[in-house]
Image (tube, rainbow over all chains, first blue to last red; front, side):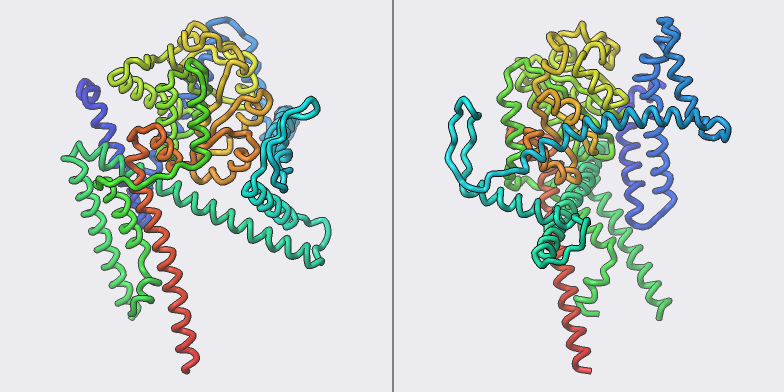
Length: 259
Length: 286
């Protein structure tokens, strides 16, 4: 145990590196090593979640009030929770439905409040000035209105056109026959495509960031354990070359079999 | 087999190898590619910069190991700024892992600053606190804004928060100067819906790059004062702070990887178009 305590950091780094390489082995092809590490990761995350929920939530907020402070009424929450399991009983499943109904009601009320606070400011700020003007000073009747420059006005116009076109695409109450309606809807579809393109680009950036983090870990955190980042880089490249040789050999074999 | 056919039929694992090379080699380069700071990052920086010393920030951290590459760097750089500006903050997590991950980051920075800049006086319990992991985000937030000490009775070390110097004068939402949320999911909306909106507390967000495009509407409406867009946002923020942290170290790799992806998209499309035109010509000749 003393050896483990003394080498805790090194053990963590080795496990991290082995797990990272094991998980990336899926890039070659689906394999048992990858599956093993995937299950370890999922199991650890679940176990950690259960332990954290008990230690940081249930124990101090529920268990200790009942058994240490004598607040017995907290036991009622367990009874309420157990009622959900009556969903498996034909005769008494109304008890489960009562609990589900209660919490659906709570969630609906909260959603309404959330909806107002979330979307109302966005609706309000959708009304944008399209004509450039100078700063309008504060008076007794209205607050100060900030200046709108020509670039601001153009930006606002693009915003308004985008908003109206995209909304018109989702207008299904009647068939869109008029050329203007059809044109707006088509434009709306194109504008959404631009957005999806931006989201796709951002997704690539996000995934690259995760890869970079792992490489940073292997080279700069784990690397010094095996002789430095350059040694780790050499090891990574050697592994890559080995995999590419395997890929090429596999392809040649497949081609030969096809011929 | 000509070059066009080769490009069209290239095994994807060659591209993986190329990407690996592109991502790892820049770690050994001494050059630093230029970074342009985007307006959302600048606004968040300016907001924190304008806050008086001793202000209190509610620092929501809701990320796990899966997005550490982006959210870890964002959390670290914003914590750095708060510590440098002597602004108090409380970490609050609605997932089990971030409570531990962010405690480690804060302790690491505290150690670093106590060695290099003791004048900042960074100390757990005095300048920052970790409220730990809580469940039921909406109801905790709704209770928190009315009565902080009653909702979060103790920190992660089981110290009563009402007794901690960092919590001096912090009773309800009106005592919170800024909300920061590092979040890879859409649960940041709960902060907007139940804290920022009703109590008009300024809020800054640090989402992953995947989530960032849909948060621009909140910036436009003024519900968010600023935003860090994934790892790029963290790189920009480090640039503003003038520190070379984890994000800056990773920035070259990100830029080179972007160049590679753009080149491959262009190359793939050019090869496809040329191959199509070749096939059309061959078809016409027959």
